[in-house]
Amino acid sequence: MIAPHHDEDFTRPLVDRAAHQLGLNTSGLRLMHRHATAVYLLPAVDAVARVHTSDPTAAVRAVTIADWLTDLGFPVTAPLQGHVPVVDGEAAITFWTHYPQPDPALRPDPAVLGHLLRELHRLPPPPVDLPIYRPLSSLRTTIATATYLTTNDRTWLTETADTLLTAYASLDFPLGSGHLHGDAYPGNLLLDTTNGRWLLGDWDETATGPRELDLANTYQGIRMGRTSAELDRFAHAYGHDLRTWPGLTTLRGLRDLHTLGSFIRRADNGDHEASAVLRHRLQVLRQDEASLTWHDL
Image (cartoon, rainbow, N blue to C red; front, side, top):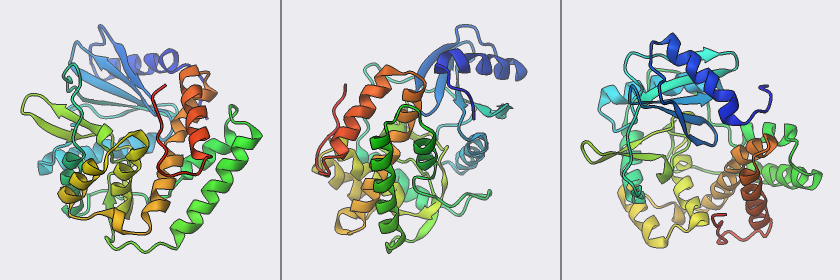
């Protein structure tokens, strides 16, 4: 395991080394975003670097999948042409085309994602072996090793995960199985302002499994205030509405827990903002009411 560090202190040298190895200018390098991965802007070459510290193999696979989708003409955030991932110890650094977002940023309608997922799920299998999607596998490891969680937290999370996974194992999936984005929700869409089209990004969790997994994340968005009308448009764009399927409750519950993983890891690293979000979300989840929302802190 990589020792805890504040992301920027730890990841910036990794980006510097990887960029110089590939001949990329790092003048003006700055941290843009950090959550599951740290994301840096390289303004001198108009590129973005993503630092993956949990699963370098998945990061390399994400680039392969995105290249394949780009070749097919699927609207995906594109890897930086001619620049391969750099593995540095237990981390991987990948480089991507930079898509500057409008200010203020536009919020994509969930129907955009519904349409893209419909097209994605119609594509032939990708030319790379994908792992089978294992719900909560990384979270269970995080729970077991986390230093921030209390004993009570750990017990509740473990028991809730066990209950959900037992229910998941007995579900019937009418949409069948195939390749998945793995983390599909409207927040992983970026606008390509040069042609006005939305691009689907963040392929780190791409896998194979029931198609319903790619749809359920948008329905789980009611935790963040997503409306019934938005879900209507998403379902119409995809051509199927999960709200008529009894398994949605289980998939939403799995997604609720899955979203905690990055906050737990950040809290372990001393991130007070992540700790506050984590405590709030745990408090809401333990009330066991599916319609309760999370609010911004």
